[in-house]
Length: 313
Image 1 (cartoon, rainbow, N blue to C red):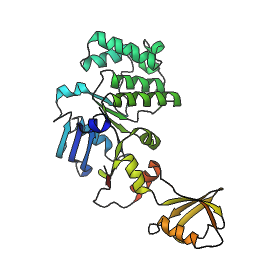
Image 2 (cartoon, rainbow, N blue to C red; image 1 turned 135 degrees about the vertical axis):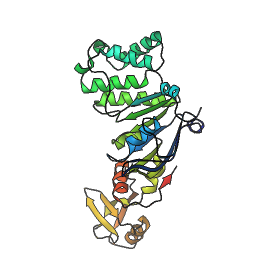
Image 3 (cartoon, rainbow, N blue to C red; image 1 turned 90 degrees about the vertical axis):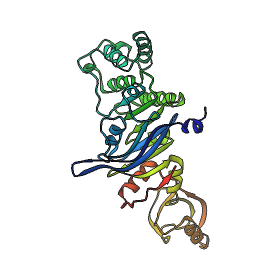
Image 4 (tube, helix red, strand yellow; image 1 turned 45 degrees about the vertical axis):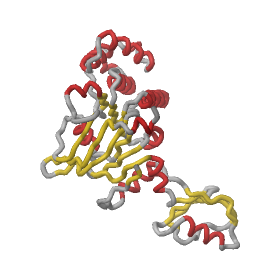
């Protein structure tokens, strides 16, 4: 099944959902969908409403308005065994042995003892935790506990996986391994919702994103399409001559190559025409610089927001 075919099967549908706590609006009219076989980034600054949205999806909180569909309909108790949730605040039993804790959690999700033991042995070996299996969780390093939490999230082979800062505490080798594991689950058809502040990981893994700020979705769509949408505000120039006084350029820096930040009203074509008309410059390279998701995140969050959500789904 292709990604497009899988994505036609909606695992999560959040439609016009809002939630208030007293006088505080935590989530306001949030909508997005996540398909089977998709890695979806739910992004935003701290306190934006991401965790509240996830807790409504998992039926921990009830929305004040709007509709949420999980795995084909409203959340039911039986569906919880088909979901894997890795919260940012880790919840493993610190005084218990690693293997017993993970087996217990798998049994709670409906996995029989023999299957759970076989899967656990494989995960402990793959994540290099075999020698720690009989140790109390509180004695494990932060990185080891993070890997243990990942096992707990995946041991029952869920159809919907929600991970909040999944790479926290991991070294580069284990970060790469965790990414490989998430991609394997995606290829197997699981829908994955990932919350993280590591935008380079979002660019590497996510098909689409929703950026939430102050409880509202302020950006929604495909990662590639969004990056193309925000391209055109920065240029890379190389050549002979003085590029320091170009009209419509807000800032520039030069380290062998010129990097120019354009004003809102200035298009790359305006700069090119201006330079082409100058006999004292020679252009060897003229490139529209595509912004990173980090750049877009900061730009969008810092701008005054309208009610219209920029969408590139």
